[in-house]
Image 1: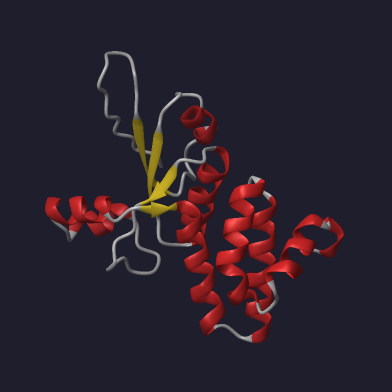
Image 2 (image 1 turned 90 degrees about the vertical axis):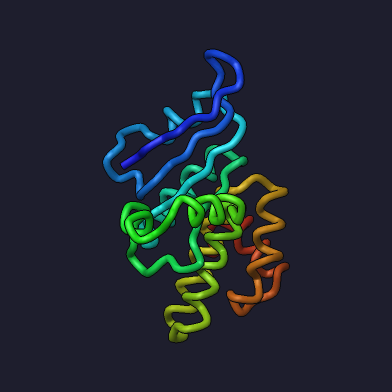
Length: 168
């Protein structure tokens, strides 16, 4: 689902929007979000694969996307669960600690890689390549430089793999 709260400084203008959950129940949600002409998107996704995909899909369409992720977010937990055991001060703290969406997604993939088997690590590399292919050249370079170490191959090899679509 999508719940949005907008900050307005001028009547009729929207500067930011907050997205919660995995987006699974909102048809065309990303199109709606990106067509609002806003400055920033803050997403508080579910802490699972659909939530990660939703955060990435939003970030892929809109470069000024930030993820709100609590330090004590449990696996497969959603924002409502977290909010039910937290305070308003906790919410303010995690908002101030927001991070760019691609950093968060890369961190999730790094966690998978560290604890995974060789097959799972190979899957992480495939995900990194797939995600990088969707990014603008500047974001792609930053993303690949940041997360090449978790893939087990060099930055240069990843760039080549991303460019050469038949290598995937």
